[in-house]
Image (cartoon, rainbow, N blue to C red; front, side, top):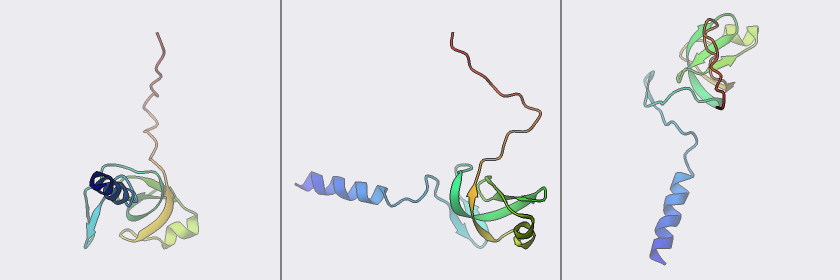
Length: 99
């Protein structure tokens, strides 16, 4: 019975993680991220690009309406459906073919 209880506790603790990459944020410092994570989430805005995109603390991108883009400031937290930034336009896509 004891191994079952230990296994149950481990499974319950593992299920409490909200995202695969855990980040520690204190006084504007964010550490411990493992790269851009797409999907809906609350992230710290690290920069703006173009006239409708903001960059999150993990490198992911969020497209906004022009009005909302104007209101958002760098350093604010933003809830958004984040995406991974596309590759640069001058890079060719890699296509794998089966032999």
